Image (cartoon, rainbow, N blue to C red; front, side, top):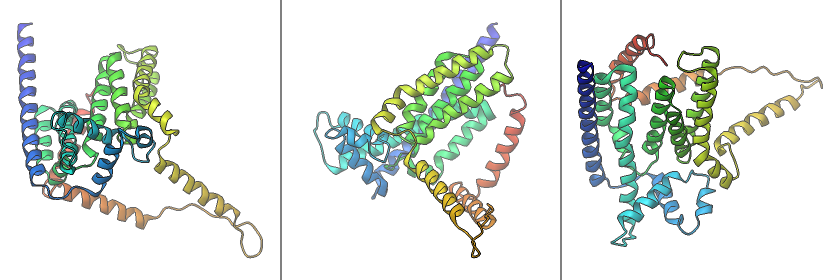
Length: 324
């Protein structure tokens, strides 16, 4: 029994050391990039303008086509950092926005490390994240005025607690996962995918119940997930007056218009024309090639092949014994 406690303490200390090294490395690189940045991203100007407008017209900012979560965090950070100085210059807003991105990048390494630890072990998780910290694009995004890392922070946190909740059957883990997904939904709507994963887990649990999680308990845990998500997301959707994001609605409406217009057309002899849906292999191949190109550029090319091969090998080994 004592040996087991000693082993657990060693594991916790090793995790603490790994996380501390990752946080210090990410923080140091992020501060250096902020101090040497000349221009911020074009989208960052819009986020800063929304943050400046928020105290006067909060409802209008929330109803804006861009989610208000990231500008709201910029507004809060600027409010805190300029509480004594009352500095309202453009540079104070830029540094506040960059600080939000960097803080979210640093904090997101914690859930990402533990997710990697569950999938590939602590050692590979540590080295994988250390490589991620050194890569140029993630480092640049973490010190620029864009919402990528704030979104990753809430997405990874929700995913981690969802995995933990599915393993241990704790209701508060599902509640935190839903809450993180709801808060992330105000930054990027893609964070709602945590709820989709939770619903898929519920379907699996209904057909393949486990000893520690019955069907009734799985339903109750999923309800906690939905309640946690609804706490921040429901008021946000209510104020905006819509549930689906504008981009998704445009895609749906575009497809429906194309289908309806195609059915109404007729051939030259007056008989209805028949159309068959077909894929576009050329465009698909171009898209796949672009995806491989961008991924290779992000991994500096020489990290691409080792990362893909090790990830596939590790996942093939762990999925056989992974309880989730």
